Image 1 (spheres, rainbow, N blue to C red):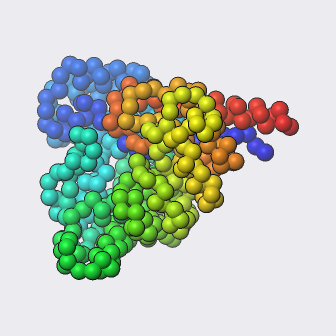
Image 2 (cartoon, helix red, strand yellow):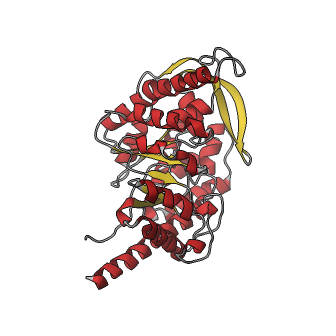
Image 3 (cartoon, rainbow, N blue to C red):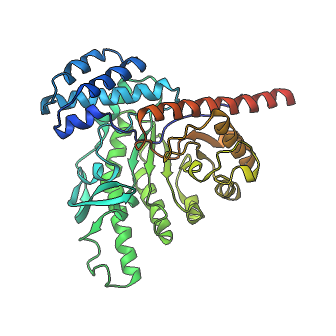
Length: 390
């Protein structure tokens, strides 16, 4: 048996620096913004970050400078993820507005309908579908190329899934009978066709372009996956339709803050899905230990993986809704508990519960560094035990 090694990575989003936010909002920057750019440039050892400071000292960044600001935000985010020691990185979605709007504003067939509240005081721009959605080509190829040019580590590209795009949209095209009209069967068929069209005509062209450009890992994000438990088959349909026969690349699905019992057994029909990346830590105790009672956030969901023999789990070990910095020992015990339940450390890779965009970069840095350290502690325990048994 080879040495145990847990791959560490993020899920997708990081918060945007104040200087990036203000630049795109057309708001003037102040000394605090410049000092933050300088502090992080030094801390992350970002090459030539002084050039960013020169641009920021202009006070109000004009439209001509915004592409350069985007590049700097991406470079800073990549370096943050590298500096804490992650094995797989991206750019924290620095160029994207929000996961739903990023797709809806690019694809044809959607029209904006204002903003709605998603959770806490977070809002997203909601659109309605007015015709069959389609995209002229790949959306995120240049983004990927920039990331790949600025890191030597593997990259994982996060993409919003077809079911979430359908579930979070108003429908003025597929549901001809209206929300209260028509049979349940016809309403379901309308939603199924919506998901299939987005998967095949919007997401798939992006995936094909990304893989042609060298992407070797595509992550499909489906936060709406269990909103309607009887529609989990549509989640599976969207994943398979978007990724079938697109080339040799890893593919995984991220689902956050859901009733994971509703996923089974339908997720067994996901085609060539490396793993499900799920939230666990938010439900868990902060006490150390590897017994069932110590790990209430993990026990039930991991047993579903064990019961159904699902190949892989992206183990959420950081609560992204709290500034609590998980001690490495707590991360270690969460991983070791998962190994005990699943019986095979190769089925586990390590990540936060979800994207970290709601947390400050200082908190993100400490959390991710602790995650990497905790994964190393778990590796030490398992490798020492294996050496002793040998």
